[in-house]
Length: 295
Image (cartoon, rainbow, N blue to C red):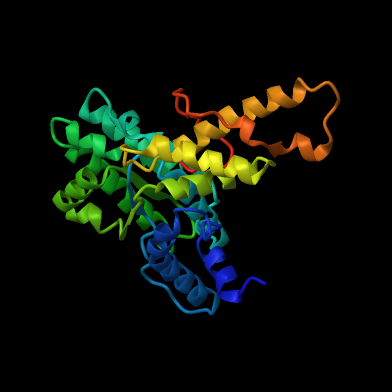
């Protein structure tokens, strides 16, 4: 039987608890989420909250390390607390850069105010370091809009929360150079990537989410294939598990549709070792809306 603390942990992390490789992320999110839950409890008890905590976050890590999945969990928590509507919107950092300073300011202003009520995740924010001014102007614009939005909604019962996502070193460097903006992002959550065994767990989890059952031989073969694919990369990219599952489901579909007789329901949802290829074939990255993504 699941213990009450485990249930509470899963609730506190928006469903992230127990997912392979995201334990460290859950631990890092626990503090900021606890602050917001305590603030919510004080409001419900009738206590005055005159200066609400910032709910913006920094996510650092490479591609495929779980940032989108964690952001969706955060959006669910914020909706539960009445802070936002619960929608996650993602935008590339490059889409906020115009050809002139004025155009950049307008893009930031429009994006922030159009996203009112949402959780906005700006991906590849570290790319701003490559701008001629090292991103100072776009960061000033973001600081200004977040400040105005806070003044417009002092209790944070509406408005916007922002996640800046990207590589650790450049993002921390930008925050160090912009302490005023850094104060609006109280927590930096690091996504370390996945080990080979965690990738195998992710593969099994995604297969289960898609309605499949792995035979023991299929699970062992998938783990071996993923370990070989990850060897020497050191990136811990969950796209490997997603890509392998895409290829496995194609193989499984071809096998069952080629059968002389209609397979029974168990066979239709079972992945055998024969369905797992010997290697993860290179392909384009999966779409952002891939079911059960760990990206």
